[in-house]
Amino acid sequence: MYIDLAHGRLHYHESGEGRPVILLHGWGAEVKTMMPVHKALEPHFHVYTLDLPGFGESDEPDKPWDTTDYSRALREFVEKTGIEQPIIAGHSHGGRTAIHYAAEYGDVHKLILIDAAGIKPKRKPSYYAKVYSYKTAKQLLKLPGLSRYREDILNKMKGRVGSADYKNVSGTMQQTLVKVVNDDFQHLMPSIQASTLLIFGEQDTATPVSHGQQMEKLIPDAGLVVLKNAGHFAYLDQPQQFNAVLHSFLENDKRRSS
Image (cartoon, rainbow, N blue to C red; front, top):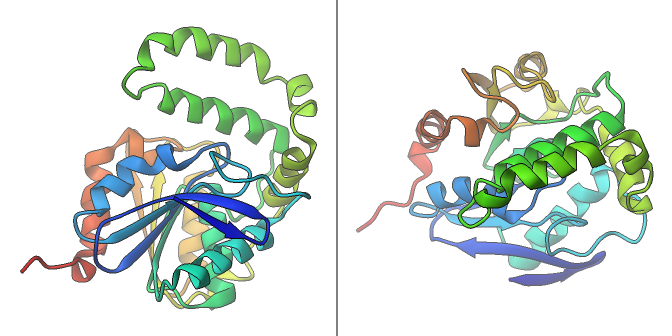
């Protein structure tokens, strides 16, 4: 499905019935990356998974954005679709956007932050461009029909994700990456009123567990779950554990079949 927003066309996938849930992917990802979570939730919820502007089938912004712009676009989507009091779940950059949205607009029933960004990292943006793109490709290539191309594509990516390649990517999205990576929302976290679940992979090196621990301290009603043997894509690395934690947190919000 598509909807026209101020920046351009935004693509999203919608299914299920019940309380609305909005899923936001991480940097360099798209709707497909979040489909395992979408599928886990759709029997009990009305789920919307978005291609954030500049990713997947959504239009790219006409100028470099920061997280405030992504949050504003999410607000416009919520208002145009008539969604009220959604549960918002965001992975990585999507988590960063969800943090800003919950603090700025407030109409969030519950918040789920998965290996979420939102605390300014010590590494340079070029590092995250390389890591996020490679990890996203690695997970997507596990999808049916793509596995036979896995090694060839990943080997090519390893040779292309150096600093020279980073300097030559889309200027708008490169500058957007610099802006969002440098956003630090620790000052906003104490104002988040929604009950918040934090899920981090124990081995996450992009958004480490220490960031989740800091978020747990700053967000008034927050609890942190650390998944063992999981990295930056905790929901893909440990799907059974992830889904068990997710459904436990949302148990009272599930649509009950008649």
